[in-house]
Image (cartoon, rainbow, N blue to C red; front, top):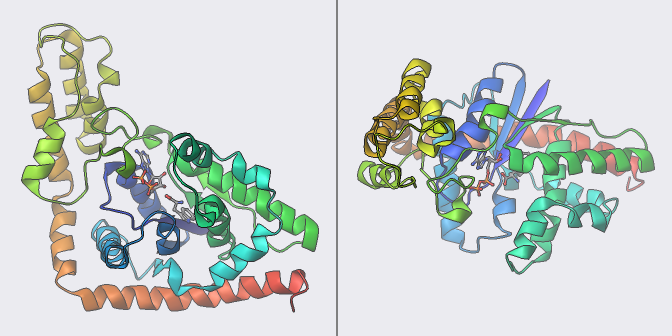
Length: 321
Ligand code: ADP
Ligand code: TRP
């Protein structure tokens, strides 16, 4: 079984990225042959500063390795080190109906927000389809918001196969229900674009402040809260604390008597402890950029070898060769 996923280098990674995508992806490393990459071509649709892209790319690599990506097992690489994916994007684009892209939630949401579209941003799901199909991927672990893009990938692969004969493997999205949508400090989906994130790594003081700033209602501590499971801090606590401890806090909130400040303090402590090992590892890795570059270079060689085979298959099927 081949497992593939990607993440954009568009800013510091946060708990939504970690629990929605990284942790499930890291756990799958043992279940098959994993290919994980940093989607720097995708980041070009919305980030235009070269230095920032370079820095973010290194940061994502460090974050992933620190969180447990095992480069001995997993092929880890930069998307742009496999330029074959850009050629496949063209081939796939020619069998992609406009309507399929116009129906994408992420397209419609951005349009509604008044985002100015460049062609790359509109064609984003086609590049994502190429990412997935060029490695004959079977399983794609992602958060809920990317599910539709994997479905679009399936549609594109089916169309190409119908048009030119069996060429691509049809992939399946894999989404963990319990972490499908991790809430941010304001209760919306945690996202870089909403400014409501709690990063995996960063300055302790800044992060404590973010956790203490999680939005709460104005009920008094004594008041029982039958909706305790809807509380964002409780939802986050369940991700980072031992299950018994999280359940205990939820019960105390439900019966009344637990103040929101104490709850948020407990959340911060548990979150900080949860990433202690990873934080240590990240500091070690950051001191050794040669190692990180070597991992990405070796990953690129492996990824490219496979990508070339699949691209050749598509070129032959479509009469380019
Ligand atoms: P952002 O919304 O912060 O820009 P991305 O779109 O780069 O995040 O997401 C990278 C990966 O992390 C995707 O697989 C996405 O589904 C997952 N992800 C991001 N935010 C969340 C969240 N709040 N809950 C669950 N998964 C998430
Ligand atoms: N679009 C994904 C995101 O923003 C990143 C991504 C690019 C991806 N290509 C992919 C994820 C292929 C899974 C498979 O999160």
